[in-house]
View (tube, rainbow, N blue to C red):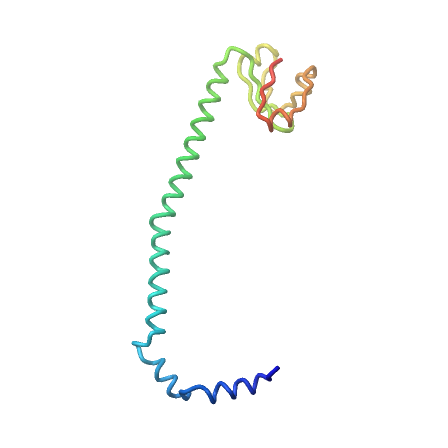
Length: 141
């Protein structure tokens, strides 16, 4: 392997321009290196503006519309559950009652079931809560 100082000496001998001449060529504003850097900078600036003023607002508008639709859908589902004449109880993965309708409160003769565990409020219910919720299954008792 050739040592690094020897490689540098070879490069200096093979280099056609001296350091002063090289610096003078770099000072020239019409140098192709400067033009290349300028065009690359303009290219990235245009991409930045395109993203900032076209793509980013579209993404944020999409997220806002999606959240709005999800909220409206949740409100509509809650309204249907509230108006359902059958008792409806919604629970989370831990078995905590999230929501009930008036029919469920009347049938169970208990007020304010929210926040209580379903196994304590309804001990006769025996099924795998996590499996039913993750598979989006409805249980009827």
